[in-house]
Length: 118
Length: 111
Image 1 (tube, each protein chain N blue to C red):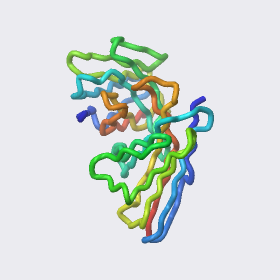
Image 2 (image 1 turned 90 degrees about the horizontal axis):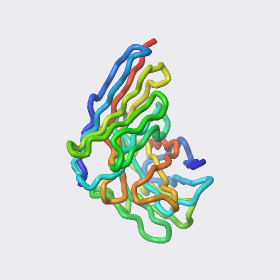
Image 3 (image 1 turned 90 degrees about the vertical axis):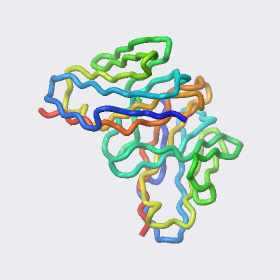
């Protein structure tokens, strides 16, 4: 159990356009989801915490108007990269925490989305 | 916030040898200590975790040990196999309901 599906796995877009990435928990409910960004051969950098039915909490230095997060249901969070530029090219990974889990407990990760902005 | 340091950054072992990766953290409120394995092009997968009320946990060839006083925990892999080759991350859970990842350790197991 605890499967997280992330879509698309790869996307190429032109500079100035917007891209939406979906993160779904398939067999559990997730009140909280997290969005990470990963550059090649580097660690995962937390971008924001997404809470169902409320506004996302962004980490310092992450532009909330650039990276729009919506968590409208207990099984779906979306990340929209608006007006994408080549420097936004990266590997974006979502993770979800079971709604019935304790404060600090395992995160279940999607397989990531590789975004390339040309 | 939490400062996490992970050592070594790269580790190369022969098949059958043991591998140990250490993670040091700064937040004394941390009470959850997981290790994740990330294979190329995939998201991280939890391989083992431990909570602060336990000093050691083992699952077949994998174990985690915790020294809360010194604020570090370690991943131990015994009888390594080529399929253990991956990047391993520690991600101690502090008092903010989020995990902060270490820089990662690239493990290569040579046949």
